[in-house]
Length: 468
Image (cartoon, rainbow, N blue to C red):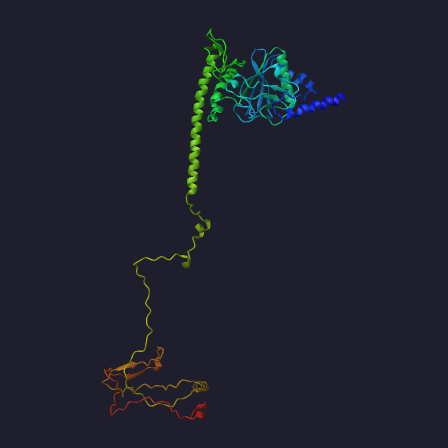
């Protein structure tokens, strides 16, 4: 019963800390606290032996946010630090940039330290190590927050550095052995990314650029020497490997003015040369990036202008082979030009028969019509037109000599010109003004007159196909 009561009390106490994210001093590992005393595994011991390291030698931790990497460096037999192992982080809080205040869920950037008191073997997140935020630099700028941890449980972070349980157990054991071996505190360097000239140029417009340049001095010192840099803060910025030179001031005040100090010759010249080279590379890369951005912006603008232009019709392969079909007349637009006359043909009047003067036409006496066949007489029988007697040509001896002979044409209504058989030669006198009078025939030569068909022919004779 007593064991059950202890477990219930431990669970009840752990619940509030579980809701607090990284900011916890949890007792969730009260029963399983022995994991904090787990020895180093054989594989890591073998790796240290290969690198000339002992388990009690000091360690140094570096974290890079954009790379999701947490590195453990350990001092080897040369007295310098070498990379022992790099761990892939599950998560880290917020975005690149320093932590400013409590609850912003940002992971801090800068130089921190883990002391023996900041190891938490009973962390709700398997195991935990407090990195020591806020430090003197953060407090000088009025930044707030607490309990920023390196812990396990591989969950979403509320501002901590999160790894797996297996990883944090190894990291915790490395830290424990180094502190037990005499290391007073473990330096933790946290960066947004590797502080190279290229990466800084990529983030040249970030408002934290000046801050990153400041912590880059400590980054460069470690990159050049592989020695843990001495970190101080004065006038609200970091100074590295500095030694005061004034007898009146031997300490650095984070919020006060910096005392007179100097950097050891062993690192000062080399660090200065690296800074000059990196600055020159930074400017060159920035110029190239700016030129590329401008070229890309110009290309986008040109593309937009080209897209706004009216598009030309694409060539038609079939039209190029067979030709473009003619546009139908009805589909062609009609245009008119003001003042331009239009040639429209004027319709002609229908030809009419000439107005001839009344003349006397000499014709021979009618001859009885001979029907050569039965069908011709039947055609005459049922014809509704008056029969036209054949006109015989007037003998040439009876034509008056004094009068010119002309060809007269009898024009029927409708303007139909008769066949040549219906024309006759007649003597035409000129038309005179006044009423038309038929000229009298000469006494010696009486003119033949047209005789109308007899109107008193009996009907039965008309039905007789043989005539008579």
